[in-house]
Length: 97
Image 1 (tube, helix red, strand yellow):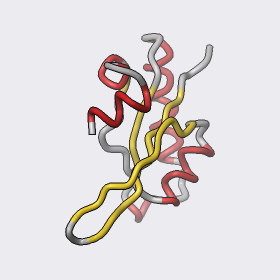
Image 2: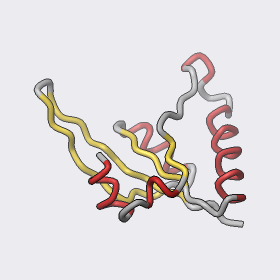
Image 3: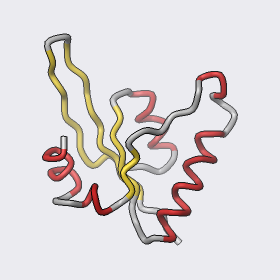
Image 4: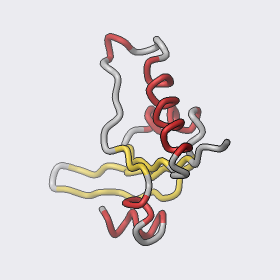
């Protein structure tokens, strides 16, 4: 995956910025603004450190949510395994002052 991230973001970019490895809200608490609040704090910290936020997701729903939050797709590929295949979307957001 690091090779694919390097191809999408550029060599070392993902490691030099805020890479969100896991970002989730318990389904019981969906549609309450918790995800937006958590992302706002993340964006403020990234902005303070002059960094971008990068993440990967595999679902169309998450892709739609992140796009609404201002993330842009930087790369897309398909992971193939013995049980099937799955799209992987690589996204970025650079918080602005």
